[in-house]
Amino acid sequence: MRKSYRVKSEKDFQQVFDAGHSVANRHFVIYQLAKPGQKHFRVGISVGKKVGHTAVDRNRVKRYIRQSLYELKDELPQAMDFLVIARKGAKELDMAETKSNLIHVLTLARLLADPAQNQDNQNQEERG
Image 1 (cartoon, one colour):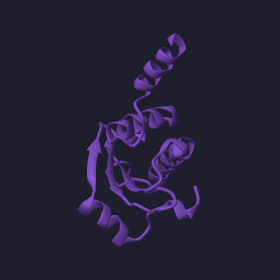
Image 2 (cartoon, rainbow, N blue to C red):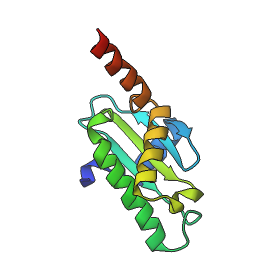
Image 3 (cartoon, rainbow, N blue to C red):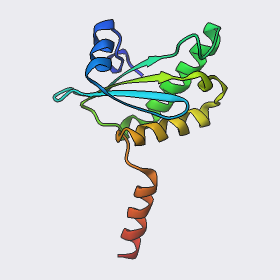
């Protein structure tokens, strides 16, 4: 993911924390802040030492999160800044589990459409 898609500065992180809305599941917390007029979404990723004591563990979690978001980027709202904060158990997840957990928490945050709802809509269209 290009650098233009990242929330990097301390000021931007703090702005999303202070004014943003948060949603969580067991492995991730999402803070979100609407940014009308922004060309594309920006994401900040935070993986603390509670997640993994070594940089290798933390960087692996960040890579998994980045790749999952890259695969979902067409489904995410564009005028939005959001932060993904990994919780302690995120280190134990593999790539597929990371993506599944991110989809769950993004759905809770209403940043992604509910996959079950999409399936219901497709079934109704097929019957109609």
